[in-house]
Image (cartoon, rainbow, N blue to C red):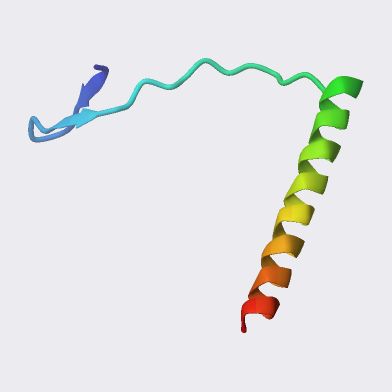
Length: 56
């Protein structure tokens, strides 16, 4: 683990930094999957709200 020594002999530890990389823009398939997941999430929330109203 990388560390430095400060004045007075104290050690200061630093975490390892992860490698950085540039992300790629989403492909058409990724965009379609995001849209499908979004619609499923909306349907789930709408269903839960409907169920809540029906129960109460």
